Image (cartoon, rainbow, N blue to C red; front, side, top):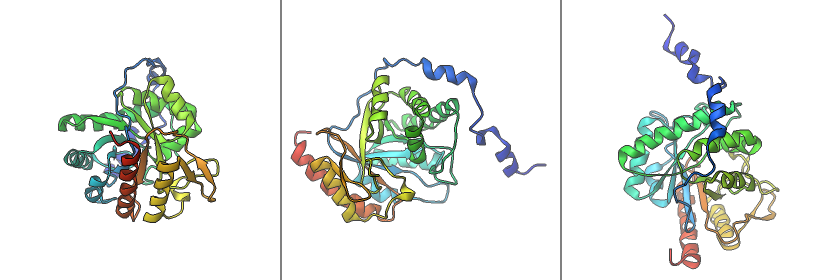
Length: 292
């Protein structure tokens, strides 16, 4: 009799390159006239990737971090997370009044969703529906609204490299009628606009930017500390500018619009980083958005 491990790895669930021909037509048939739910930031906010443990393995200090943030991006089981952790994280959001969003990723538990994996567009569409749909069912059970969707790690970079993948992901996101969060980039913002999806631009303070003003993968970024995060948050909120990995200044291009600042919960100093950024965000909101 074959072992359970052999059965698992021979199953189609672990072969995301299988083509589901029926999906390809469906991807392009969705109307760009969908009415999307409101949910964009009305002032500066902090979001963090949460629920990224698995089984008995814990990743970040979710319980301590949750009171310091405004929006949680909840892992949906592909790059991290499992059903019990997803439900626990939703309940933490509910307890602390934090917006609950979906954080779908590539099917890569071993690599934490940060490795390059080639996926067919039809499979990608199905994978995003599957992950966000699972979280949405749990949110419904807890009486919590789905706030937003934010693609995780390598999935974000894959979308930037391949516009067909970007469209497949956004076609799936459009079903849920909520904003999509992403590092500020004109290409994705434009495609979201064409599809009627609200785009929420982000600034990353614990990851580096390239000389072109593009986000750099976590593995290629310098180690951060609370003071560096504070300085980056201050520059973004006060001047709309950031510093690239060479120390040169560039503009984020928000032009006065509120944005979300992302923190990674797997960074060792995340709690100290969050406290430092929280002070900057609260002070900036009092100065720039006093009536919100």
